Image (cartoon, rainbow, N blue to C red; front, side, top):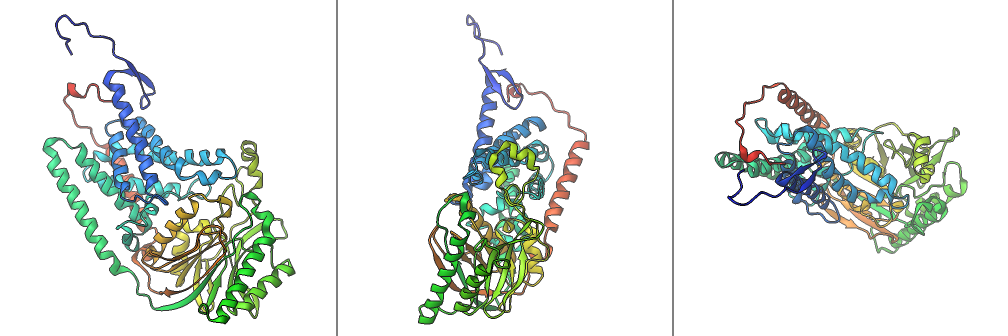
Length: 535
């Protein structure tokens, strides 16, 4: 570029370009910072789609911003921008992980999850240059979510885009295409939006028409989706007991007897309300996870207290407890406690929390954080997660298990007519964890066409209908009992029938599209001076 006569051009300021890991000059660096800001804003907007903020409509915009940030930047820069977006998303989403154990576990988990978004960023630009680009971009995102839901240490599905759509109009789609499909649709819309913004004058009309076509197809499917919801065929009256805890923090386990007594006492009070006619008599009662961390099969006093509560209400009680084994290990177990015959069927939690219920790489992790030594020595259970309560087949997803697709799919396929989520959130204080978990339960209700009952030690306990609507809920850290009638169903949704098949189709499609893009001959492009200073 030639300067005006008589004016000598001054030196351009140096600006650090994170995508190239070096200092560059002029507009090059300025535009790099714009991309960096767009990537960070993308992650923050994704975070805002989750409870308690619930700005679900920002999800497609967030994805569009990330795609525009990585556009034309190649794999290495795309990975960098993806990591920035992932960090800006997971760091504010997951502080509950370190609520009482410090920032190291929280930030370490956030970094690991951000690396998966970095992988998406590395391939996103290449996918965006293919025909039918929104389909391949959305498939790549689903493949990324599938991977981080499985590795490392069994995966961590928390923060999937689908779980931020519990208040959005796309939620009915979960019954047809499941949680992975719901994520696919959101990213599909975001990718189409990015295509419109990035198109040149000549192609913008075509891109806009494609975007309108995507929106029309998604809208039509959303309208039709409720037709696939299974009919509700019967009802049952359920009581949820929230006994509360004496105090917050990791010393929850030191409060075992007080927590058990709280749940026994609240159940006996419920029985008095039933006898007086103030509330209807339930068919079954559900206590939370860890409502009796004293093993009632080894401790006669705990067994006597639970039996007294069951006799008072006169119906089976699902009791969350911890059972001790002779080899020193434990199990996170839900037991059906009959008022006449005592303990019966059991569900041992199948998906354990790494670094909480068990400790991978114990020596290394303990050296990094002294709190890690407090991790449990639990062993996972087997089976399909279905228990019989008063003749009702109930799918039990204990706390963390509700985040994993396959567990509830197996349970509902095995005949479960109702989903129960006994949970203990007391060790996460007043963080957003409780509300994020509740949003997952709402998505699961629609996905499987089943009512969901969430019973928490300290709240929030809730009743969710098969449309994902919260019918009843309690407040945090207050003793409570909820008695309500819920619907049952035996019919399977398309999402339950197909299970993980759509997810694997998307992942396979993404892999094939990536291979095609790597193998095809690049087009010859005439240099354009206007692009010389694009970061």
